[in-house]
Image 1 (spheres, one colour):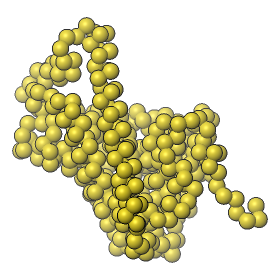
Image 2 (cartoon, one colour; image 1 turned 135 degrees about the vertical axis):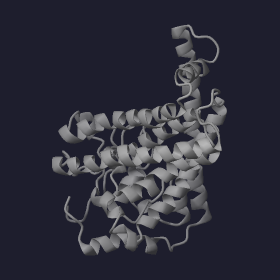
Image 3 (tube, one colour; image 1 turned 60 degrees about the vertical axis):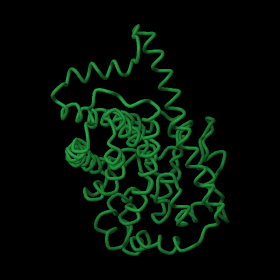
Image 4 (cartoon, helix red, strand yellow; image 1 turned 90 degrees about the vertical axis):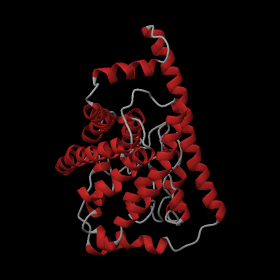
Length: 342
């Protein structure tokens, strides 16, 4: 990708002001709220069904009795008794790290080699990253590793002391499954609010050129660049929206660790560049990287409220912004409109 010109930079940073000024019909906002509710609710129902099913199979396989997860946690708690900090870092650093790099391993292989071809068929921007520029990827990986290890590691220390000050995040009793699901829903709503407004803040012309423009070097993103950002932006816009929920609610380590994993896999999917079957649609955020001044949030509720998705809703990408339940790529079933003369 070539470096943006000064004129395009001004368009990227300042374009949101014009689009946010238009009013949206109440029905449009309610439609967006219903869609977000459907996504969050479906996720909660899936976790509930998956958790109950997995628990039953594990108990049957290992012959465990009683509450499988509580017994497992008790063994871990006893093993780390008196070392709460180590247990907290294990849950909030190791597990999310495995989730992030595990989900990105296959994506990076596809981005670098262009194989297997049945995945590349689902690429959103067909003419980009085919394959990805190796030099550009190496530069991004250096920043991603620094943010993930150094910046996120330091934030984990801060979060541990904040949560320990409020209570005991590594307590001996796990939260009930239903309470954990309610917390995940609350985390998702809080993330939408904090991410949307912090993200728009970094699109202000005075901040964009110094901080956020780095992330937008990737107009066609790949999964691993979800945390390719200036360290200040990584703290304010990537980390704070995610860690604030567990800190405010005084959540248990188990829920916090699960939420971190969900958040990292979710942002990986949003940036992956592939609209894969049976996974959440990344069209919304992919369009943000393509056009810069649209689609700032996670679920789209605040974008609909502030009309920062008005241009997106007039595009083919919006028509494709749905759960793909077949194996036919949406760029084939909903092809781009041919330009005149083609």
